[in-house]
Image (cartoon, rainbow, N blue to C red):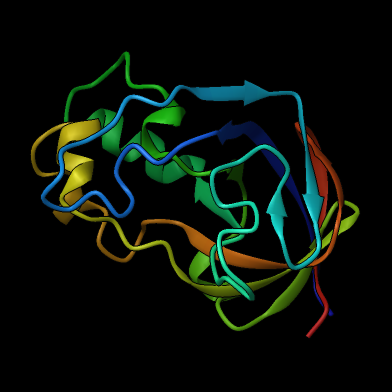
Length: 164
């Protein structure tokens, strides 16, 4: 088991899908809400989020995004006012290599997650951020996770510990 400190910088929920499942239909405009804490329910998702009870054993019950990747996008595309919410991931954090957590069970604060797969970017990133962001994010789109043990996740310093 390895343990490290990470900083949870941003937490988000949204009641609806702006891009997911919208191919050929155009985007929507569901507000993304910044939270100080979010409630995770094992096997179901983040309370009040669009993926809560989306489907049984859904691989993206919660999504994580790397703050360093957010900063790289801002710099590369000259977007000083870009907000972390543009990526529509639930949790933005500083510290871990998210791709290294694919297939791993780990705790983040009091919750336990299993890294399912990369939250692959798609062409909608070009609309949400800027043309070219979709390609730029390939391999760095974030991490989709299943929630193994629920609880409350808050902003600030958290301990990330690999369980498997």
